[in-house]
Image 1 (cartoon, rainbow, N blue to C red):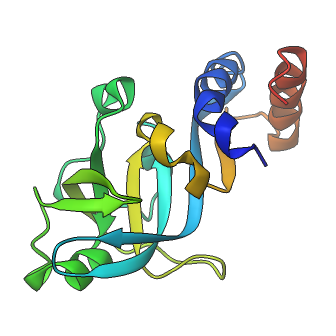
Image 2: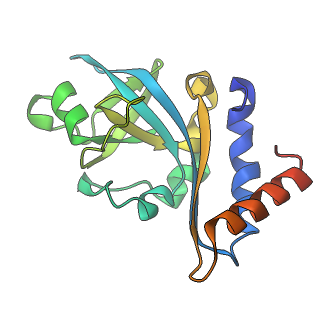
Image 3: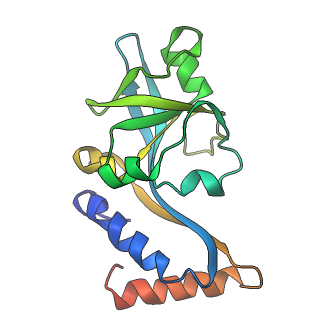
Length: 178
């Protein structure tokens, strides 16, 4: 569990390290999660689970289907753009008829423009029914909200998951990331 001040700087280190295990991993993504945050507009507020994601996260998730708008692009991540995706439940809770595309939401008093709406996620026991997805590189000012930093890895065919994870941990230890 990274300290709040180090979370923002952890992403580039982890992302670069994960690239080194690409011979063993078909796909990978890194993200941070804030299980309960306040997301507000001028018309209301909801408690949501916030995900600070990289551009690869939606490729690995079958349950995050785009409904309207677009997903996060590489340039959103590279530039740390203040854009967001929200799920349908959040769109309907914050906006009349769920028409949130192009509207502004605030996360920890930081504005994000909604560029896409995705299908509702399946909340786990530590998450809320509402979800927001923002570029992981846009969280410098609100990194104190995020409690976990996670990495999803889809092993290459024929590779065993625990072997891939062990290679990743060895690389991170060698680079003093963990």
